[in-house]
Length: 258
Image 1 (cartoon, rainbow, N blue to C red):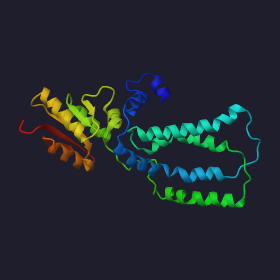
Image 2: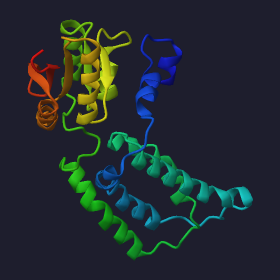
Image 3: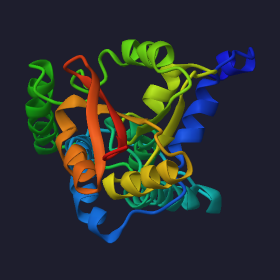
Image 4: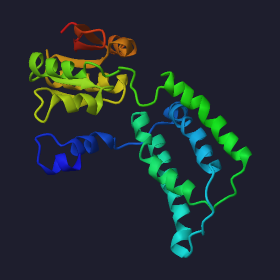
């Protein structure tokens, strides 16, 4: 990606990711526990492998010497801890790929432990810990490295927005930078991210007050639209679906009676 960005493409992968990765706020109190559970649903897959690395047979070797060497394990631990806390307290998407930057630090941290004597019990325990996860992964029963087809067709959606909705203002919450990436370097719509249904309703009313008779659009996963639609109707917005492909949906929003 660095080489691609250095070549000066019209759309910077690193720039696009950085722009959408930093949300500029911390989570609210009600988000803390659900986000912790969601991250644990991914992080639990690292636990057996952490134990496996700790118990894996190792050759005896001389332990590192010097103050610099002794400072490295606390640095690894601080990096892992800070990374985990930031991804919990910032409203970032809970994706398994966001755990990947932890792996080098975890591997180095675990490898830095003083050498231990390998015993048959340790070897047997390491195998026992690895088998269930290896079997589940081999059978495709783990959700790791997959979004379950959640974003399948988002490129088609982006093309449709750029053509059929050119010049329109489109509200979004769930699709984020994934949609922004496929809209391209010069999107033909104005994509506005909003934090929750209440914020979207307030924002829409503000725009309608400035531009009476205007229409705004909302794009989301079709299966997850119900809570948003209920909030729109309760907030005094007229809602009409204008696009749906079974995966994604677009809704036109306007003032009731407008």
